[in-house]
Amino acid sequence: MATSADSLVAFGQQHVTRGLGRLTEAVMAKGEGSYVSFEDGRSMLDFSCGIGVTNLGHCHPKVSKAAADQCVNLVHAQCSIAFHGPYLRLIEKLLPIMPDPSLDSFFFWNSGSEAVEASLKMARQITGRQNIITMQGGYHGRTFGAMAVTKSKTGYSEGFFPLMPGVFTIPFPYWHQLGLPSNTSEEELVRLSLYQLDLVLKQQTAPRDTAAIIIEPVLGEGGYVPAPASFLKGLRDVCDKYDILLIVDEVQSGFGRTGKYFNIEYSGVRPDIMTIAKGLANGFPLSGVVSRKELTDKLVPGSMGGTYAGNAVSCAAAVAVTNAFREEKVLDNVSTRSSELLSSLNSLRDDPEVGDMIIDIRGRGLMVAVEFASPSYSPTDPALVPSAPKNLATRVAKRCMEKGLLILTTSLYEVIRFIPPLNISQRDLQKGCQIFAESVKEIVREA
Figure 1 (cartoon, rainbow, N blue to C red):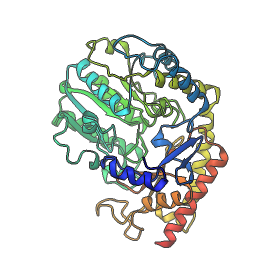
Figure 2 (figure 1 turned 135 degrees about the vertical axis):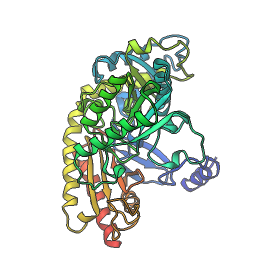
Figure 3 (figure 1 turned 120 degrees about the horizontal axis):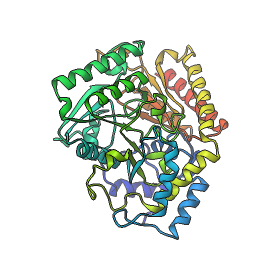
């Protein structure tokens, strides 16, 4: 086996399937808190959290200890054979923090994509209907059903058609999706999107054929765009009118990422089915599908399951996550750090040297995005700026990495997303914001 950093990378490039993309050709060696280190000796401040997973930082001691303790008691207790303690204790911890008290029935799986697959199966079996309405710009995963309802970019489905049938799409109330100026009022964006939903139900999939509407309350791979409360309420009204199920995908926006346990809480809207994952177990593979018992009692026993679904070690880690949130007042830290992050980004936008290149700052909590101008957008896109540097988001993210900050782009637009640990210190957040600002100014000057 290769041992040096360079030889390990070369070995991986030779033998790891090409279908996996990577931000950097390096080997991660260790994670601790807000930092990761690599085999080549580099240490980086991590504003990616493994794409919104390690919300409590890398290797949180309480979470790691809970998993280690569970490993010497019971590692695998298959969910179709018997209950196990960590699974039931996790439900007990989650019940009080659900966004609506009706959400009282839980099924745990491994990944967010699997949770979405389960939610689609459930919606079809519960309603006896087939069709699903999804959002333009939405991301729900790369397995077959999840891929069919993913509309953030074609790269996830290109070459894999035909996809799961019975999927229909409406525009998310986002000015890019509707081809409108960025200063278009929220009221107008919501009106247009709900009007398109009405047309889809009249022209493409009748309500009696429609099982569910699925939505991320904050678009993830679509650009970190929060859904207006009025839009979510409008979806709820339509679902109630036609007995359609509302699936809320909180895989990335859940577990404190936006300042509440679940982003849907901001709207007061009740999901019929909610999917959770990522921050649920802080890096251990675990996802969940939550609904209400009156619905899940309609499922046929054996229709749900999976070899590793609700693994005991992952569930034990998730129990420790819920304890840490409460004991360490994590949501309070999110509120404070969010204000500091947004203040820093707005100060950068006010800088006359680079401000014209920043067309939007958006998000909630510590799920925040900066969108840059682009000369490469469609000629009909109102955000097209012919004088802007090309590939600004990618170039800024690369420069940040050179300076020791791991940060990600997202969507088909020029967007950089901020996903730091929810318990990040003021000092580390300030350090990351300074690196980002320096990188933006350097790239704009060079261009």
